[in-house]
Image (cartoon, rainbow, N blue to C red; front, side):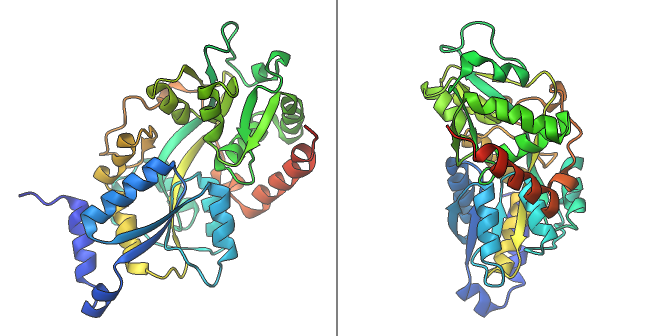
Length: 339
């Protein structure tokens, strides 16, 4: 019988623990910031492979960063898994997460390793996905939007949803993308004009495309793989990569500094970087591009090579100074606007 690599890694790590530790500490507190279904599937797969029980909480990226910041010095979580890389980088800069160099780094895509290097190995890339939007083809039947500028069309008044960038990593990626595409002042001018067409700023980054799938809105601004998920599930959603270019996320993973179960956290970290663990996402209808080069990329995943991607500056837009300043300006100039 063959033993796969991540099971061997987990078994080796557990064998190095004192017997009393193994008997007393076989749980992991996971802060998960991908979709609920994927969070559950990943947690269950880890428990099957290692015997370690997972206590999982699912929140958006911004909410999870805020929770970890609030718990600084008395952390309750062990691992922050998933979500856009910018808040992970901010947490790393602020010393909220631990340095760790997994033996599986050599198996990862260059963009995943770059994320680790940028953070001083306090976070690492686990998947990638491009930003875009999706529209309901039963509601938008002609002159379909193909570019960011098209979303300003008056016919979409109160018919677009996007998340609040304070709670949503998806929406912060949009904010940082527009700033890099247009310049900061021009980006905020665009967002003010777009505001007339927004019917709701949601808490979750994927909620806007679910609203478009049900006909609550015509358009949802999201990561493209989230739009693809709705199409796969039978909704009349068409996925768009904006013609001007777009940003992308490096979904990340971090060990929370001083977490209650540090050894179990490292076992999760190594396991989650393995090819087999990264293939769990597709079974939960999550179609990101995995970071392990040996992992199969779901055929439904948007092909990054075919999308006009900007040279997204993760170090700059994941820094505390820049991220906090952009969010404060969004609150003052966009979030404060009447609806």
